[in-house]
Every structure is written in structure tokens, then in C-alpha cells.
Length: 414
Image (tube, rainbow, N blue to C red):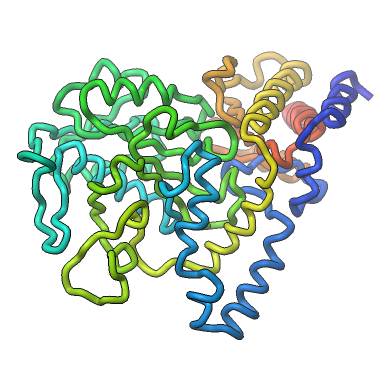
């Protein structure tokens, strides 16, 4: 047995999170694609079976009250909240990430301009004065997942703003009193580079604009600290590091101080102050409930609620420590096993700049990943030449990391 394999076994024995691996449905595959779809928590099938057979099959419509269906978006939001560093009452679960990006970004522009929707009439009025129509710019992360860019451009058209795509490092110098909102990704989905959420949020606030963060590639992998760092609005999916299942509902964070003025561009009957009053005019509910739109997708939402049980007793700081240790160890193994010049790491070496994935540039990366999957190592490929390996600390072991690097080397030598 190689020294690195022995070291992996030793690290796994010392791992304080090692027992969590048993709470997932896993096999002999090395699964390093949790940054796209998390593994199945073992308690979810039984919980979903109960939702279908008893709550829906027997209780039927009564489950909206008796099984807590109606309050699920806020209840589950409060379970997501500590994973992103938010106090209760600021996160609501529902809809997709894309829909929530749209709500957050348009809402941020309206907040920055001092626009507030009239309680009953829908009339837009100034927040204590005239709306600040001079704020006519939305800055968007130019390296973002494409959908965020698409949504940002649509939000700009709707609000009469111009759109300015920039790399996150370029944002502070470009901010001005005309900037209304800035949409940034906490981690680059291709390279795993972690951006400076505290520093960029402070820079955005310095010019009176609002910061909107996409947390899809960090929530559940590292501390985010939305409350501590003054984040205005944030969105994220739940099917990556939160293991909620394919297409599981996303979440929207609205900072408490903004909730009374948050004017969603998608008001719906479930975000109404009296949802069963069926009033023709809209009056927004209080709190994060303003972020709701239509009827909750109960089956996937309650699967997510069950999946979040794996976080019971888990410290996000411990998850972050293991994430860094795993990615450090994997990179060491790659350096030891893979011939020099065959791959290049795109993921920063500095811990402060690294998320929970490793991206390797590799010639013929698409074919290489297919071969890796055939050999029992599952990552993913991003064109034109990037191999991505996601490290979910709750179930990925150091032995997995060593095996993945070893099989990569064997694949490249084949």
C-alpha cells in the first residue's frame, strides 16, 4: 500500500464527520459530483413514502393544515438559515434558483431606488421621498453560471437599467452612485474560486447599492455569514451540497431590515397578506413570506426537509475544515500520481480563495471524464477542457480522494 493510501486511511479514522457517511445511500463508486447533485440521504425514501401514502393518500386536502404543508416554505427556510449564517425568519424555500434570482435582483433595484409597492393598490411610491431614478445600473458577475446573466439582462430591461458584466475583482473600481444592484456568485462554478463576499458586499454598500449573492456552490460546504457580512439578498439551490434531490426547491434570503420594503416582481397568492381572502388587489405578507409566489411543490419540498436531517449536530466550521483538508489532499495525490504537465489546477491554492471543488484543465477532458466514470470515479466535465471534482465533506472520504487521483493517473496513462 502506498504512503498516500495509508495516510488516507489514517485521516479517515480521525475524521470527526466519518459517521455521517452512513446516513447516505452510497456504493463502491467514488462520487465527486455533489457540486451538481448531492447523494441521497438514507432517510428520504421512507419520509417521501409517508408523504405520498399517508399525507396525500389518506389525509388529502387536510394535510395543508394537519401535515404542515402550508407553512413548509418558511419552516424549511428556517432550517436552511443556519447553514448560510442567517437568523430565523429571513429565508423562504420555493421555486427555482433562476426564479429567485429574478425576484431578488428586481427587488434589490427597487430597494436601492427607494421604491415601495403600495400596500393595496400596487402603486409604486418613494420610500420617504422620491424614487432615486438615477440608479440605473446592474452589475453582474461576468464569470457567472449563464442563467444568472440571462436573468440579470431581463431584470435590467424590466427596470430600465443598463447591464455591466464584470469579473468580481473588477467590481469595486466600477461601482458608482448610479449602481443599483450587484449580482455575484460566491464561488465560480467552473474553477471553484471563492470570491470575497465580505469585502465585495462592503464595497457595494459604500456607494449605496445592494448586494445579491448566488450561494449555489457554497451553501453546505463552508460558512457564508449572510447576516454577519450585511448581505442584502441571496439565493441558492438545495440539490448540491444540501442534498435535497434533483430539482429540489431553491431558497431566497431577504435581510430582515429590507423585508418591509421588499417589492417582489412576482407577487402571488401565497405571498398575499390574506391568501385565502382572494382579494383583487395585492397586499404583501409580512416577512420573508413576501418571497413566495404560488402553491408550494410539496413532494420535493418535503424530500428536502427530510434531507436536511443529516445536518443535525453538524458544525459548518467542521465541514469547511474537512473540505479544505480533502481538496488539499486530493491535489497532493494528483501531484504525486499524475505525470507532470498532463493536468493543470484552475482552483486556487489559497484556502481563502477556494470553494469545495477542484477543477483540473486537461487535454481531451470530455473523454477522460467518460473513462473515469467507467472506472468508478464520477466527476463532471465543463467545456472545453475542465474536469470538475466536487468534495462533499459529509460523505466523501480521504480514501475516495486518493483513489480518484490514482484512477485519474491510470486513465491518462492508458
